[in-house]
Image (cartoon, rainbow, N blue to C red):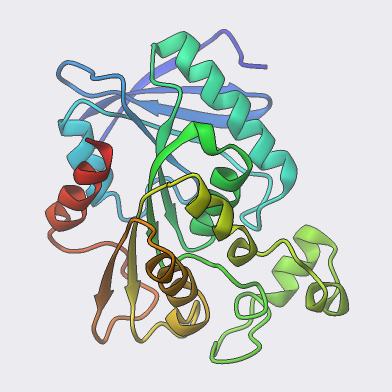
Length: 244
């Protein structure tokens, strides 16, 4: 469980509490002004491309993170995040549900977390999310890069097992739709690591076809990086509509 000692630091000009939770690094960033009880859970890559998170911190949100065993989404990491959410609600007085911020593999983690614990998710900002493991990390299809060795070491899954796998993020999107979880999806149309056609587009098309609440920002000529937008206000405004 959480260690009693909390280190007080700062991050991007905001107060930061740093501690361990069930043996993993945990971070909680607090707004400088009055808090509104709302919060974001960044599922991986805490400090990467934080433009949207910084804007919401200015609006009274908290930002939280707890480290994963691996970025390839083990069940134990999802379960720890659920207990972490409960801890934050108790200790910091935050709402039960949060806004998911998931980039790349963090998007995969976010989708699976929302599908397993839909009551804990109010909305989602997904940026170039991994939806189909055959595309990324396996590199079967349009992807030019393979991350297979890292994935195999982390999950102990063989390629033959992956071919028959039915727990991809894309297999979970029906649950998100059924629970009316709104999504802002940001992707690059020239992504060769997590190709849009094999990942984010599947999510977008499914939601659109079935009446789900989703907004897509497709960045022309953009690869996997950078995530977000130079002016994140557009993403923030869309998420605020869903959070209202």
